[in-house]
Image 1 (cartoon, rainbow, N blue to C red):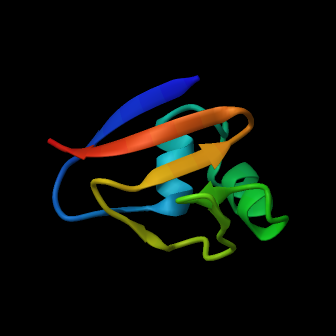
Image 2 (image 1 turned 45 degrees about the horizontal axis):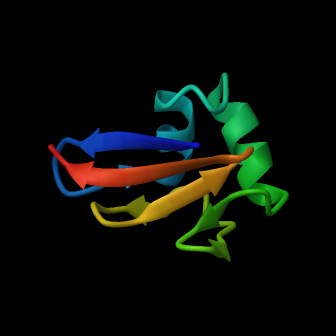
Amino acid sequence: MSITFAIRGEYIQLDQLLKATGLCESGGAAHAAIAEGRVKVDATVDTRKRAKMKPGQVVSFAGEDVVLVAE
């Protein structure tokens, strides 16, 4: 399934995105999922908790794809 998420400003940090979309219930859960290699950015595992996600990128986690768009 796919979620479209509008970014205010230039970017959102990966951990904040997972929390904002409700895919993780807390920042700690988001950090753990990222550190365990369960999050993909543009089909590649990304373990940077504060990676800057920008419009046009796709984040995949827990069977969901989050498509980032500019607000």
